Amino acid sequence: MENITTQEYQTITPYLIIPGAVKFIRFLQDVFGATEKYKAMRTEDTVMHAEMIIGNSTIMLADSTDEHSSQPAGLFINVPDADATFQKAVDAGATVIMPPADQDYGRSGGVKDAFGNTWWITTVK
Image (tube, rainbow, N blue to C red; front, side):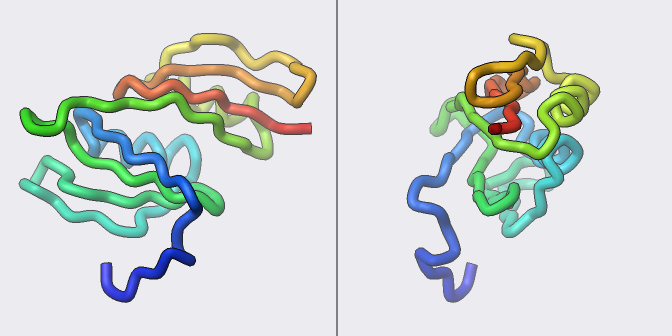
């Protein structure tokens, strides 16, 4: 994390503390096409800190520990094809909260991933 400037991050960056961070990283890559910006491991299987890029946004994350309990989030993600991305999430193990449907603002559906996060997958009009 050398020479980091605030220009490399959006104003608010979600920081998720979850169990199974290595698997969560794979979920982000498979479903949302995320790329890894940075990852520091605590042990071979435990993420101390990671940063994933999705579109123009960064999500920071780490494995939960005894000192840092799980802190999942609710996230709204704007994607080109809500139906296709929703299906990728379900195929990757997410649970359906609400199937994709047309809304006033676009097409949107909700899933809960295996790590406790809720995703509102949306294609905005």
